[in-house]
Image 1: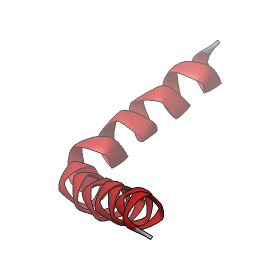
Image 2: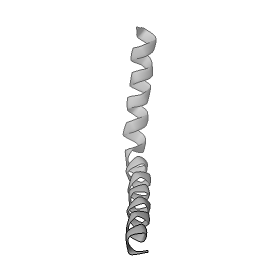
Image 3: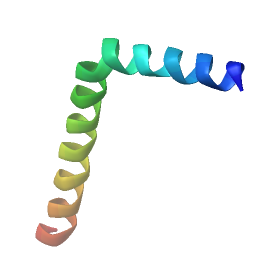
Image 4: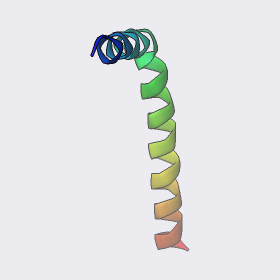
Length: 43
């Protein structure tokens, strides 16, 4: 149980440090997906 709590605490710290990078990458992915979807409609 202690290992699970330690891993969760480490993951939480990682998310706190990198949330802006995750948001940045997901925004780019969403924009590329939306562009591809619009391209299939317009094409």
